[in-house]
Image 1 (cartoon, rainbow, N blue to C red):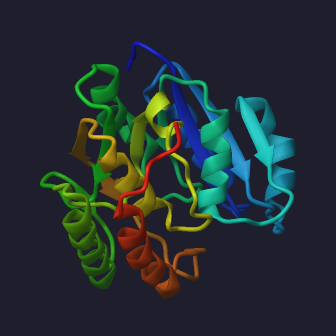
Image 2: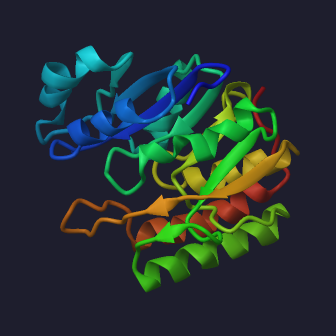
Length: 236
């Protein structure tokens, strides 16, 4: 796929020694010809840093190391600040989302048909390989988010969110952990920009395989939906 600009791929990473090389290979193979890959290692302690330095550093544009573990939101804040592309997409370091689907998510922005694109796991045409309770929880959080933001989206908690760079860099990200999703959704909604959804695939991993988000993060998401939907201006 030939886009009309540069795509910045932001990859937050924490203790992903067993997966990081495979996901980087998939990102490199993704059908977007012009991209910069920015990895933010959030103080991994399982050997991930050694893999990054030894095997991955020559393959990507930037690796940034946190000196303490601060959470996914903090890693994204660092990566977004470092991005120089025309469009920015978030990519988790696990294997739940398929980089081969980048064109679905980013092309509407490159074509100037949208300012922000959410890759939905629940739209018609998507492929949700997850658990029923996970699906219900995500749909419930999205429903509440829509009530507070006025949006009509189907998947607020999706990882695959793409933004015009100037939009995401204008938003002050406050959440350090998984509250990033409801926070950035609420703050994007306030900007009154063009937000669309496209169907994507999803292949979840279990706790045994390294899934990090849990029940407490769901409660935090509820809090963030209310907090960031209040009349609070963004930075920029």
